[in-house]
Length: 389
Image (cartoon, rainbow, N blue to C red; front, side, top):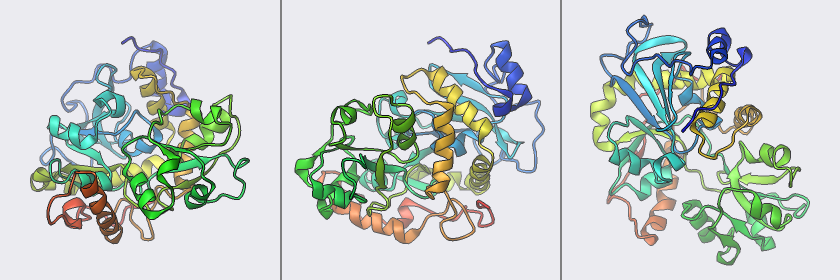
């Protein structure tokens, strides 16, 4: 797949990367596959405890919701447009840690299967994205344990036209209108909304294809799923045939409070990886703080990766910037009532476990017998001193 021209700027990535961009070369193109021998290890040394390359599997194409993971990369990195991955020295606030990191795309890059399925097919993956409901549903065959929650609230939403439904403020109120709601089939939150009575079976359609075509064609009559950290900007500013605001409610605020995008390991490898996680998780916490404090370079990388991977996914610098700020404004990322970022609310995980268990059983994928919150998540590696200011 041919590479697209480099389009990075000094403002976004600094003088070094800008010079690389002007030369027409991929930044870090000469980086070796193993840890960089010419970099001095900083205050945090992961080399004795962690794999030579920490491999992170995401759940979708590069986007700002993944900014914390891409922020682990410094100025030297190598892009593999065929494998849809980027790798380089793993940095802790600008200092080398003695190991590399590789961030891999999900979605089309892994055949749209779940991250857990990919983790069990490819055991070179160190950490993968986990969603609490999927953890419950897959616990019998593909068990994972989450160790860090970069996002405190799931960005997913149901959105609608405020001109068509001016009195609607919630998904439950939308349900009362009888509006047609499109979503990606198989999403278990929809089973919850049906069981809870917020929506009815005759008004949902699992055939959403990710494009705005049907939403536009319905001229405001239909609703659909989306990310509150992206679609509100995209539909108002980048979808010419719509070009106006949308209203929405987060599925979290409608009662589906599962964590999304949590860093997880295969359950059987948890003990083996614990010495690494004890050092790595605080690094990843700080990378999250660093990204939301100064996102420009990482957003530049995310946009570049989208262009290089060329999967059909479109992601502009404006969307990247909006998404980062929207995540903060909506509290999708945050300290969640304490001083630390990335920890799990165990009562909330228990709630999701209790809600999801009968849903999983009804879907023919019963959870592991005796499954507990401790099987799903842990806060033991969280540094309570690291949080957003």
